[in-house]
Length: 528
Image (cartoon, one colour):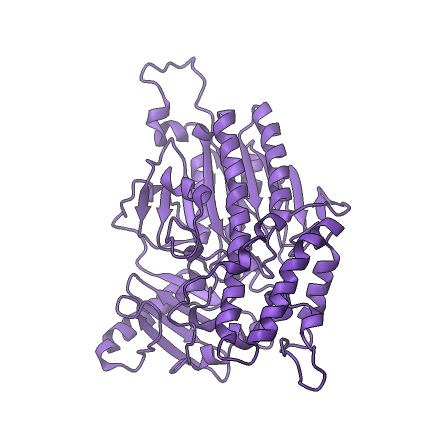
C-alpha cells in the first residue's frame, strides 16, 4: 500500500485558515480532527433534520444546522457488517470480500483508519464494530461483542474481554468516547475517533429513563403499512412483516401473557425455529440489574395486558406498529441525547472549530413502509442512509445537497481532508466538491447497488442488484425463482408501489438503465 502524505493540502483547501501575512517560519495549519459518529439501522425519517413527522432530534440536527445535510445519501449493500466494511475500505462488497453478515472480513486489508494512523493520527473505535477481529491501526479499541446488548454490555478493550459494565449501552459508549476525547484534547496529535452506537438496532430496548409515558405516544402510520405487494413477487416473499414476523423480543410481551388461557393456542410470534426470539428476550431481561428490572416491570405488565386485548382483532397490526415505533424512536432518542454530550464537549473544550463531525448510519431501515421492519432491499427506505457533515473551516452551516452520494465516498473524503492520498484503493469519490451545496457537472448520474445474502437465511430477501438515478430506479432480481426486473418512477411513485417494467411508456428508460447497469458493473469490476 503506497501512501502519500500531503502536509500542505489544507493550505490549499482551507485558505481561510492561513493568515495573509504567513511566512515560512510560521507553523503549518494543524490537520483537522475527525469524529465519525455512526448508528445502526437509523432511518432518515427518524431524524428531524430530514423530517419532523416522527421525532425531534435536536442534537443531531445541530450537525446539519452547522454543516451540510445530504438528501440523497445511499449505501452499496444494505446490511450491517458489509456496510461497515464498505465504509472502512471505500470499496464495494465484491472487492472488500464482506458480501453478507455470514462471510468473513479480512482484517489485513487496507482501511482508511489505518491510513490515518500511519499518517500520524491517534485513532480510536468506541462502540459497535461488528467485524469480529480487532482492526489494525487503532490505538484505542473498546468494542462491543457482536451486536452487543442494550443493558450491561460486555466490551473488548484492546483485545481483552472485560466483565460486563453496568448501565445503558448508548450512555456507556459515550462515557468512553468522552474519556478518549479528553485524552486527545490533552495531546498534540490530530485524532480520528470512530464513535459507533449499537442503537437503534433490533430489539430496541429503551433506557429506563425513557419508559415513563412511552406507551401513550402515538405515531402516524405510513401509507404503505398494509401493502399487498402486487406486481412485486420478491417483496411478497420476504419475511420482514410487522403483522406476523414480530416476536415477543420485538413487542416486549413476556411469557406470562403469551398463553394465559390453555387450549386457545395463545400468541404466535416465531416463524424461524432456529432463531428463538422468546428465549432471546428472556436472556435480555436476565441481564438487567434489580433496579433496571423494577423500572421495566410496570411497562412489561401494561404491554402484556394490551396484547391480550388486541391480539386477533382488527387493532392488532396498528398496535404492533405503535409498539415498534415507541421502542425504536426511544432508542433513537438515546443516541441523540448522547451525541449532544459529545457536541457540548467539543464546544466547551475548544475543539469544535478544527474538528470534522460526521453522522451517518450503516444503512436505512423500514419504519412500517410496505408493512416492514429491517433493511436489505434496494427500495428507498433501506437504500437511503442519513449523512450530515460539520466542518466550520470548510462548510457554511445550513447547507444541503441533492447529489447522489455513497457510503464508500466517506473514506476518500476524510483522507483528502487529512492530507493523505491512498493510491488505487477506494472506489468512492471525495465529497469535498459538494461542500458548497452545488453539484459539479461531472458528478455521478447513477449509483450501483447489490445485495448478496442467501435467501434461506434470515428474512428471505431475494438477491438482487440495481441502478438508481435522480428519477428512475431499475432493480434486477437474480435469485432463482424470482429472476426479473422492476422499474420505478420515483417522481410519480416515490413509495415504489407500481412496478412499471412492462410499461411501453418507459421502454426507452428501461433500455437506458439496463445499459447503465451493464456499464457500472464493468466500471466497478463486479463479479458473480
